[in-house]
Image (cartoon, rainbow, N blue to C red; front, side, top):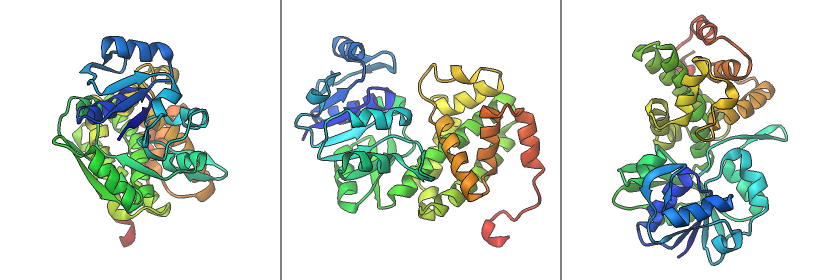
Length: 327
């Protein structure tokens, strides 16, 4: 079986290393020719994943025909902002695995990456999500993930990716898995803001606990299964992203409240939470669903809201029961 990885950033490279280390022939497609040439010459992705040697079974290329020729599966590891434009220009694969975490607001509704891939390609799509920092996956440190979609596809992904350091569970709640993966980036931005303001462990724990409740409220409103958000792609991914020094979203939140300009926050890679929160707020305006933490993040990032005023507004909200069902 040959696999094509679409996207040679940190996550795409890490997934390529994971598969190739199992002896699976894998192509790694880079959008830039010079990057593909450097990866072949150095056998290392120095820009996005320094210090990790590329296995022999991993072949980088900038030629989409070469990357996808004979590939049974294409793994989409592209930034959400480039997903549609890039996929439209590529040859088709028999089926796809989306490893992109994001949200799209189109035609008055929210759409997940797998839904966009499915609409563009007309092919079956599964998703892979969980607490999976690329830096650790590529170094074969132990982690777990969720493969979601139609059961047959989810089981194929489970078999393909499972190994001594990467344990894969299956789920049929594709939408819930993706919604959790998107909202956790927004909450990680908020966690970084707490870190940047040095508000302490209590504040961060409270933020993430209430953020998880916000994730459940949001995800179930859009058709996700509640239990999904307490699993690897919800709570698990939230914890990893909100606490890790690897996390671009957490780091971006911290840098933002320390005065760095919004346009500089992606100098180390795409910050998916910044795009997800814009889509989320466009959708929220139409639905009126209460998402106070996401609204605060949006206000700080795009509305010029002082982060301490955003905190004061959250703390001053009216009394509530902890569980919405007990209100």
